[in-house]
Image (cartoon, rainbow, N blue to C red; front, side, top):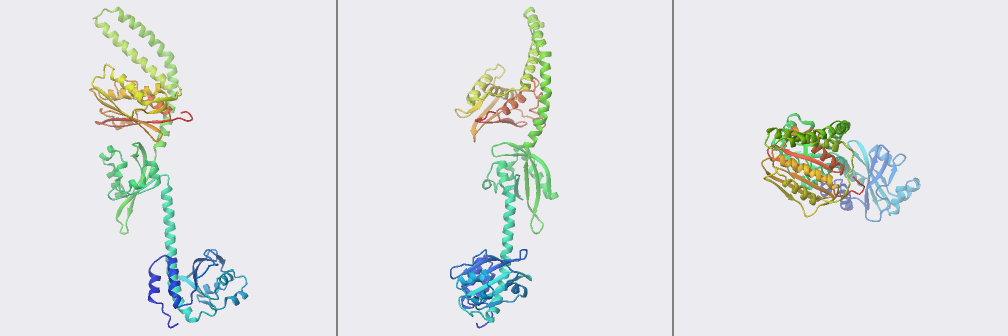
Amino acid sequence: MKDSHLPREIVEDLNAGRDFREIVEGLHARLQHQVPCNRLAVALYDRATDRLTLHTCKSDGPIVLKEGFSAALKGSSLEEVLRTGEPRIINDLEDYLKTKPASASTAMVLKEGMKSSLSLPLVARGTPIGVLFFSARARSAYTPAHAALTKLVAGHISIALERSMLLDELRTNKEFLETILQTSADAIIVIDMDDRIRQWNRGAERMFGWPSHEMVGRPYDILVPKRLVERGEPARLRELVTRDGFVTGYETEHLTRDGRHVIVNITATAIHDRNGRIVGRSTIVRDMTGLRRMQEELARSQSLAAVGELAASVAHEIKNPLAGISGAIQVIVESIPAGDARREIAAEILAQIHRLDDTVRDLLVFAKPWKPDLQPTDLVDLIERVAGQVRNEPNRKGLLVRRETPASIPLDGDARLLQEVLLNLLHNAADAMPSGGCVRVVGEAMDGHVILRVIDTGAGIPPEQQARLFRPFFTTKTRGTGLGLAISKKIIEGHGGRIDIDSEVGRGTEVRIVLPKEHRHGP
């Protein structure tokens, strides 16, 4: 050897920031003319277990001592190398094995044909992190000059190895965090300052129905109902995060890909760059729809119990007397001469009695336990039948009912009960348009479900009333029992489906029903 300086190209390789294995392979090739090097290897030291494990190995022949081999440091000659920080030269491995017959690593290197060994400590920030091994097929291959040069290599290798270990740790942590992010049951969404989605996890895919590749880059407003966008809710949420740095427990509504409205609870946190400027926000969205439904069901079940008791009393205490009163009034009406003003008054009394009788009937239908009789049914036939009935009612002049469906939508259902639901919804839509208008009845089959939408262009329902629409006895009509939608909800849920209402004042109302197409085990 002429000097103890590393060639420039080797230093450039060591500092190039490449993959650590590529660095070792490059050194093995470039050092051939500087240091005997038929085999080059790096072992990592684990202080916790006090063991050395072979991490990387490059040889010009078959390898017996392979990556992953591990041995205890204590009691080996390498213990002295790491303790003193000085190289170890063994110029006759066969003689060395005779003195250390328990050295399995030496025996395996000999099987590879190696006869000499030069080992150097790898140290980072004063702490041993491993050992660098040079091996040669010739005996007496290494000199102190080789040791001096390879100490320079070991210094650079230590830096490259530490950098590689840090990158591996960062990569592992990143993968760990990404796993947490992607497997979270909640939707985790990252949004930039332009309110565009930059990250969309699998929880968001499950909750809202859009895959990540369709959502990244799109505006966050796509998830917000139109009425909330017009009220400025997305801007208000952004302002709160910008002002306070975070928002917790923010409850609102979001939209799914199939048009469902879900109640969500939002926790949003500002994201800062290295200069402290806000560059976006991370948002955790939790679907509260199921919890709200359970709370509503609990309240409704308690109400149903009270209604059931009331219905039994009503049946005995009101229905029979009403029948007697109705019969008596009819006799009185017949005895009053035509044209007598009293006849019109008596007829109005009779109409009110019929209204009371309808209320009692609806109450009994709502309260009684029943189970749908599921049979193969064509929803399109039901729509045509009910639409024809509503069109022919004398007080529905100017009403247009337009069906937007395929030729047939088969499903398992109770035709009589579903017809009652359709009739109630069309009556509600028609009542919302007293001067006439168009009711659209839209039906389709999708992913094992049947979706039915009844859309009117009436006055709409104020937001404060929408949460109460399915409650028994709640009505927005001057004439009505307030049980129609409650009964409809019970029928739809009895079929294993759900019913939702979306309404906007001045623009109309949409009722959306989703039913399973088939029932393999009953409702």
